[in-house]
Length: 301
Picture 1 (cartoon, helix red, strand yellow):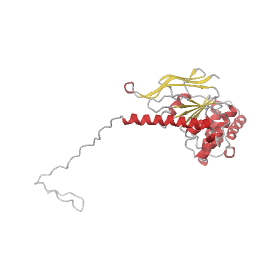
Picture 2 (tube, helix red, strand yellow; picture 1 turned 180 degrees about the horizontal axis):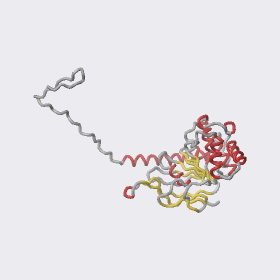
Picture 3 (tube, helix red, strand yellow; picture 1 turned 90 degrees about the vertical axis):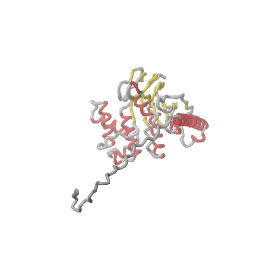
Picture 4 (cartoon, one colour; picture 1 turned 60 degrees about the vertical axis):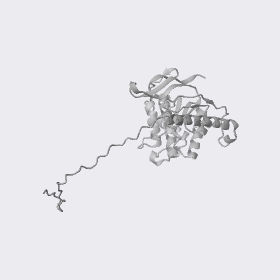
């Protein structure tokens, strides 16, 4: 299989040249066509910034990010992004949110084709019973399904998932994991998923790539997931390869966290500085202040 996505020695920095801060540094990653790759890391490490690089929403400060050998300069329909939040237009129904996305990339599509295609993707994520509902009428899981339907309706070659399930309860999260896997196994799209859940990464991915702690986070050595598909979540805890990977990845990530805390302990705290307090002025013994009258006027002796 050929590499469909590549990150070559890319870094992302912010701030003036005299005081630059590296958010991501010296990233190297290759993703093959139809592969499912999970990037796992702690909050604040720069996972969303990495996803913005892959989608074209963020340009690297140095290095390059390639799609099919060409530099990614801007977002496009071939790189379908599914965000952490739902990003649905609140005044449109589920179906109309999907239609809007399709119409943006296929402006010449006929009304009948638009309706058919939108219904197809709404049904794919099992929301056909709520196609006419507005986002505020949906549960969190249903909103995320609507967001997935909208992203899939663009027919992207690469599906970029930026922690799309992190805000869901455990049962809804498991259900959507299975839906994403079913869609992936049927359509065989390339998927890059950001997650902070080790179990989720091992269940879904072909490869797991840890992101080290920031600032200056980079991609560490990957873990191959050599487990046959489809994977049954109900028997995973009895699978020796699942337990081995889960243990090794958790140990590696906790080691990163420990190193980060040790580095933080080396920081010298600044002294606690408080503004100097001033004593009230001392009045002359010959000065006599009359009380305020009941009418609110000050009488001067």
